[in-house]
Image 1 (cartoon, rainbow, N blue to C red):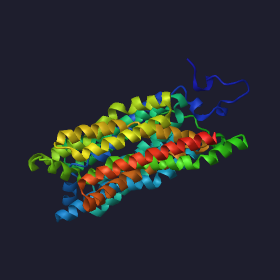
Image 2: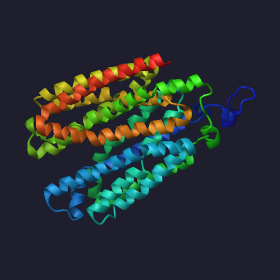
Image 3: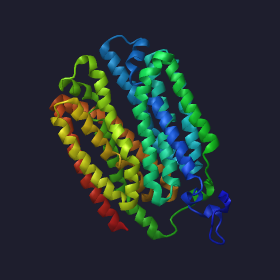
Image 4: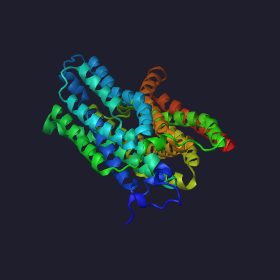
Length: 423
């Protein structure tokens, strides 16, 4: 059995002369497994507070219903805002000091902050700690950087699809866990349990994840020829198109979230069952994505990432439209699941293209910007959806979002042409 230092290397070429993914040929799959588990547990911990967040806000001294709703929204969105701000910074540091230190930093930081949320004394501390969780955390973002750079080029789409499945599963199961744990452990005890789950991921990351990273060698890897550098300069419009597309994926998925309960209620669901049915409808898009993320990632490896991106954007845009004409909640749930299935192919394919759009020594920073764009869409999406619903009506949210996705498909097609001309 070969050791990492025994990987076949051309005569006279040192091990660190290989590119980053080649040096991790032996253990990128093991690292992927840990990253999937860590992304799952951290996102379970972050999303499990959804069912009881308003109750916790009330326990922290907020009285009026409008204030409870407002502070709950601020506390929930604070984490995504923090991650959007710091993801590029952590990506750049990953390029300088390695991917594993960023994973350990995120896991340890989130484990500590999650436990501290359980001892918050007022709503301002809750919001500050949720923001801090985003600023110092981002395990899923760090995992994308590690998996996106370690996986071989021909398997990167599949690997990122598997990682996306773990993250989606965490977002799906988190609210279900949050519906049960407070009854057994209490609300504050639930946060301690979440911190413990992330601590397990931290230990696995420390002792199982392997990385062969030499800061001096990695930072000194520059394109050897002027032509290569010129190609990457020409790719910046393509990079901008990828970032916009990544933001649109989350924006489209989250645009209806603020008003989905109201929309489900307009479909004849009784108030007694409204919250439960709305929760099912919300979960359907994540469930659909779980079914197809890895498969569409593998498809991108075979037929090309641009083909998958353009096709998924068009299909998702088309699936948005019928959601405005449903007459029963189960029809909406089915269409949301179908939308999740088409959305799932986008992020792995975008991440794969982003990885190869810049030089190796900038891949962490590039994927950090990509994560920032995604979380920006997650923050902006509900705001835009709420504004459209108030001024144009509930059904208009689906028309506007569907149109934006089709327009984004045209942008992706332009970016593909631009990239082909630059090569």
